[in-house]
Length: 89
Image (tube, rainbow, N blue to C red):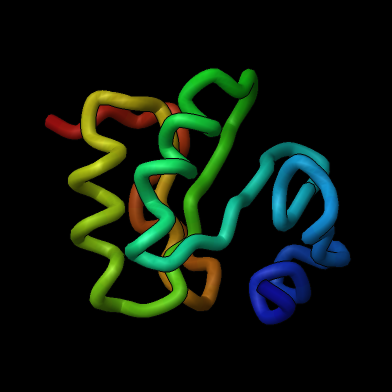
């Protein structure tokens, strides 16, 4: 969480509605075990939202669980794997 927040020049907000709140988007940092809850929460949020996974193995699972949503996916360093709003082809 700290590494990703630093990458985007903001402070983490673990007690807020999102783990990281940047000016133009929000990020929840999740493990593979908590992806379902995060998808349900972020599915109804307005604006660009992302799930950042805590390990590389979680990327494929996050992409699968966010399929057919506008939730973006980030890798553990905060790199965008799928942009928020993009629909898979």
